[in-house]
Amino acid sequence: MAEDTIFALSSGRPPAAISVIRISGPLAHDAVEKLAWSIPPARTAAVRQLRHPVTRELLDEALVLRFDAPHSSTGENIAELHCHGGRAVVDAVLAALGELVDLRPAAPGEFTRRAFENGRIDLTEAEGLADLIEAETETQRKAALALAEGGLRKQIVKWQEHLLALSAHVERAIDYDEEDEGLDLSLLRDCETLAVELEAWLARPRVEKLKDGVLVVIAGPPNSGKSSLINAIAGEERAIVTDLPGTTRDHIEVPLSLGGVPIRLTDTAGLRDAVDQVEAIGIRRAAQLIEKADVLVWLGNPADAPRHAELIRVHSKSDLGGEVATGSVAVSAVTGDGLSVLLERIEAEARDVLPAEDSIALNRRQALHVSEAAEALRAGSAANDLVLLAEDLRRARTAFDRLTGRAGIEDVLDSLFSRFCLGK
Figure 1 (cartoon, rainbow, N blue to C red):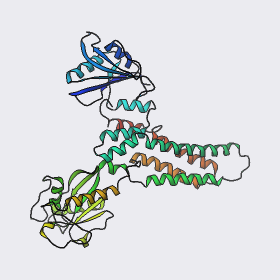
Figure 2 (figure 1 turned 30 degrees about the vertical axis):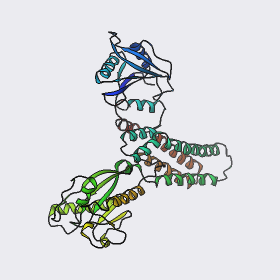
Figure 3 (figure 1 turned 45 degrees about the horizontal axis):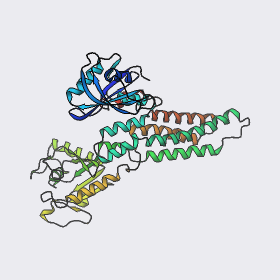
Figure 4 (figure 1 turned 90 degrees about the vertical axis):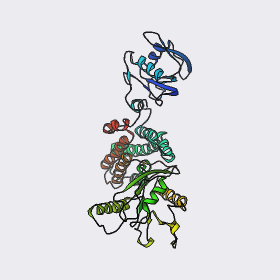
């Protein structure tokens, strides 16, 4: 438990109908008593007059809630003051709390950090909360909520229980088997089974695409209608459109949400033999983006389309006529015909590269430690000595401890909790 007591505005910036001020730490309840004379029983709400602790000037009439350690969100004594949401009211209550001895304003993310340090949540749940705060689309919200509610933590507990059982079996064999009868092959098979399960998790789509957005690249030769299509989809003039070939020299990115799916729609320079050095740079960047694209939208001759797993061929400028190749989507940026069909195709292709909504997706840090555990178990499945097997299992346990935040994660804590807003 922390020795100091912290406070902060935990709701949105005033003005608002109600503002919530949180206090957490050993003096949280004492602080409320100094402002309100009395504090209600645990998990009970009561209306109290809040007065300045020195002048006794009336500050506000607020709803007061109390939570006792360890049964609170931070694992400490907590009090919440649900005040009227005017700026002057909030400032006055915060100033009054600041005058109390041994109370100080909280740093960003400090409430959640205390919850982690007091064992109320593990590191994966803290990461889920950070993602939930930053979520901008429905798909991001669902993935973050699954993590914040302990979806990955529960799975890790199952892996750890399996791993501890294997370790106990090996240690017992080392200590008590008097005759060298060789390794129990069932131990090696169990190590391999768990390694295969971890590798299956590593093969899933990562959460970064969900957070950063699916990269959808619009490519094709000059004057094929790429910039006009970008503008039509964005609903505003984001790219310069002229009849001159090679107008687009660098890529232009437009963030979108299609059906709750985050999209990074990107216009590129027309692909041709460059006429100057600047255009050549733009074309090289276009080629690089095509390689990185999660979804490629090709405008131009369908036969010239690059090979890509998620390819959408577009017959652009359909208002001018022309034969539509089989499998291509006819679209006119001028009339809007076909735009809805194209957006549906883009959304469907984008969902294919994202984690399923009902699954837990790993981030880079989590995948790194799951990979470490899988590698250790793979080595254990090929071990020819009990002592070596025990060491491989220990390495796997250490990887799981780093995954949940039990060990070796000091370098990531400041970075993680700095993502939280003040009062969270």
